[in-house]
Length: 205
Image (tube, rainbow, N blue to C red; front, side, top):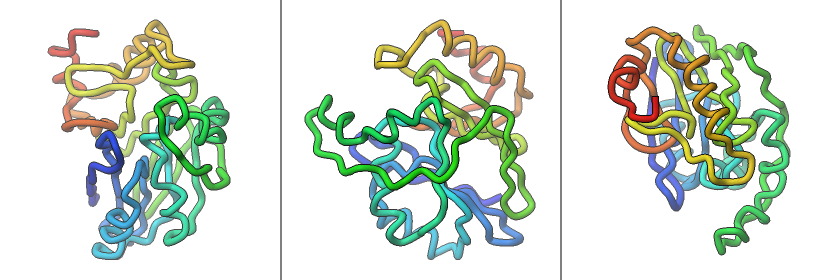
C-alpha cells in the first residue's frame, strides 16, 4: 500500500494520500490546505482518487477542500456529528481571526464500523469522539489514521467546543488500545508511532 504524507495548511496538518499499488485506486485523508501540492502528488503517482475522507471538522483538516475538489471532483465524507463544524467553516475561521471560505457540499456521513473499499484494501471507520463529537479514525489493515485522536506520546486537545477528556480517553482505550501492538499510527499532526509504543509511553494512558 502506498502512503504519501504532506504537511499542509497553516498548522502543519498531515494530509495522507493512500493508494492500492496494484489498482492505483486511493483515497485522501484530511485535505487541510495546499491543494496544489496534494494534486501534484496524486498526479505524480497516478492515483485514481475514489473519495476524500475527513477525520473531523476542524478547519486545519478541511482548509484545502474547496480548492481540491475543483481539481479532483470526488465525494467527501465526514461523521454526521461534525456536520455543524463542517458546514460552518467561515464561523470557525472567525474564532481564530481567519477568513475561510465555505466547504464544498459533503456527500456522505460516516458511521462507526462502516467499511469503505478502494482497490484491494478495506477501510474500517472507528468513531472516536472526544476531540470533537464526530472524530473518527480510519483503520486499513495494520495502519491506523488517527486524526487528532491520538498522537505520539500525546492525545487531542479537548478544550474546544464539543471536546471531552472523558470521551476521548474512553475512545482511545476502547477503540484503539485494543488493536495489535504492531499497528502503525499515522496521526493528524507530527510523526507516526505505534499502538504498542503508546501503550508503554503515552502519559495520558
